[in-house]
Image (cartoon, rainbow over all chains, first blue to last red; front, side, top):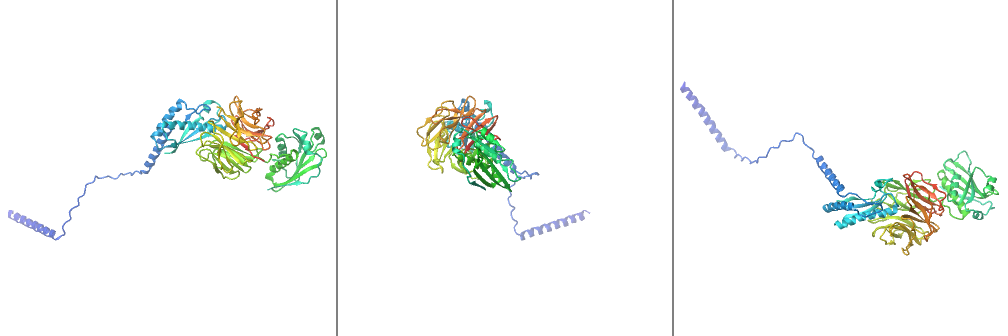
Length: 186
Length: 404
């Protein structure tokens, strides 16, 4: 029994060697196996199951920036209000113009239009001149503050664009005696 | 299409000029016009138009009636009367108007008009002008026009109308703040517009949408006034500092600065002969009326009473300057002689009364009266009588009255 087992083992071994010898022989006849290319391992990125359209994000940002800019303009280039028939800059107006001047300094590409307005009392003709005097007084102050005059235009609407019309009381009239800013270029 | 034919003079039993010279206000009767067929005019009855016209400037005292009444004529010293007849065929009307001697009933002169029915008021106005010419020897103002600003809040439109407020037409100009309109002739105007976001001067024909920029700068160009005698336009500009008075030719050439005061100089207007210019200046501290010659020399302050005067308007005869003056609480219309004498308060009605302009023959001043939040154009005689409301829809201001 043991003898029979030994012969079995020899046969299996012979067969193994035979096949092993055949394989080696075939290899020598084939083209050389090309070297496996070196592949740099990249981290695997799993595809997002719900892709996001980013176009909305871009416009949202632009609108946001614009809103932020307009907010800064409103906060820094505030409308200033004058006394009746006057274009004198009160201390309160000067305080506001310091803020405006600083803002214009910090935003050196801005060009602004300063518009002078009047209340509804008095003639349209004279108020056209008074409104311009108000705009000019603001421009003059900002020019002295250091803003180049080339960055500031002035005009007057006289009493043709009141903020409040049909006024009877002075608190209503005073809303119209003003100089306001409009951004022309940025 | 409107055609007028003068019928032959049949008789001339009354000397019209002599008759007119007897009265401050000439008595005349205007009778109802007859319809020659069954189509009658109900809305713009021509006899009413003629009666209103003649009554307008106060030069005539008009008696209205159905038929010639000799007893009434005698009683009211009426020496002449008008009657007429009309016939409507389709859209066309034939209108015959007659002036009679009230004593003899004889026809003095007749005139025949023919045209589209929509021009019936114009026909009647033309006949009123004829009567004015025959009786007074002067041109009548009844076919003249007014242009004014209709305030619609953020925009202000220019509106053209007959002198009596009829036939109002919004001029087809670009929607903007359009103010201070001024006639160059009956078909062309110059005005201030904010089309570019600032005030410049524009010119255009009234019925077209055309508007040509005429005087412009980075600054204010406003308050134009035209002299057809010297063919020049005077206006207010801040192109060399604050507002000063400038003059140029009607095509914009030959611009010249006339005033150089440190104050606001504005509201210039011409004397009728073109030799002088009246304007407003606050060089004394408050707005007052000044006059200077047409070259900018010999400036003289005209008004001293009150501390706010503006909007001077020189009368066509040159004898008066109308202006608005702020009293205790409101503006009123005044007149003053060009030498500064005899300031006279014309308006005594409620509200703010501003923007005076003269009728072309000088019998009447149009102005804007603002009361209770509504502003309308009124007319009044320089002596303060004959107040009449011309516009009724409110928001009217800055009228200008055309020449004949």
